[in-house]
Length: 500
Image (tube, rainbow, N blue to C red):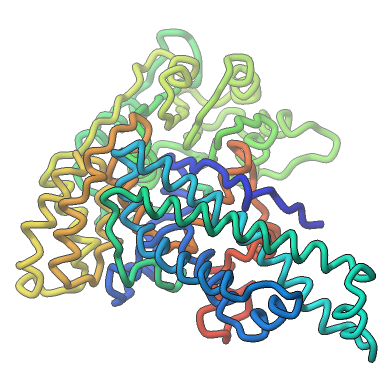
């Protein structure tokens, strides 16, 4: 069963956390290989909605059906023109709303008006399609000459009046648009190209050698001052700083393979579910669960007397009783066993910390950040061919302030974009001045340049609670039901587009 959300009339607030960026919209290999101009990458979340409405309003059949109810067709023509004008202002408004509250309020009013228009036009379209299925010789006579016998007549007139009010509202908003500029060519379609794993390409990691060695020293040292066989090493840092990448480097180090008999990489997630984590550990160490025993008992037997390295990646919220419950079946591991916990929450670090102090992960240097950015943005390209872009690239990197995810994301965005004007546009964007302690400006900027249809899919995911486990097919079906998936050439099935 598909549960439709009230998204159109009450679009959810965009939860632009760095975790959503890194897990829902990682730098896409498809976008990295795309030669499409950058202006076709960005776009307002409303652009695809308006495009559908404009196409519908331009339909002669739709217009004829509207007029058949003695309604003024010029209303639809004016609404079409007004929506096109609004559409041209959206991209400038989306950028300026970051620093100008008045623009944010203006854009919010426009969104509500557009979504209201969408609902009404969909209802009219439904009546139009229903009328085509009525195969009665006298149906037109009844509708035209005895209108009170057809309930649709009253509703159509009501919808005509509602569209008139929406048109007037949009016209008022256009009069108060302030300094918003009309931008052509943005919001076009670009093709589309979680759970963490221990896989990493070490040649793509920069500036983490000293951090890695500091953690390795803890892992390879016997810490037994508290008499415990097991010690935890928390890695703490802001979102996008590279905690998972550092844990991956450690997990795959040859010294770890020689020192630990058992290894397990488990994604902790936002909901710390001890039962699920225990099952994941059993699976990763290839231990079967005995039917006559509980999973925690099976885990205790599987690790008893063996040296274990457990990585709990991306832990958001761990209470002490949950942590103690997890440690219970692990208490008989071999002396020197370790748990590496990556988290952005200092409270989680305090709960998991044992005799080893937590490792605070800092940003990387500007030069390391540049190396990472350049590898993604210029990979496979002769350095001489892109020398004219380096100055803007280095300025973009400087504004990333040493955040690896930001450098990687923007590098992927600019991959194969050779137009220096687009690099200058990102370098000089006003979004760099935005302030939000949870969202670095570089990631806000990377969201802004997502395709407009991706923004709608992204926003839809925000109506679900933190830690919600998405079923891929279910989510694709709901995107389809909401009309979010763009079918550019009519050759791909909607399910295939959603898969991408």
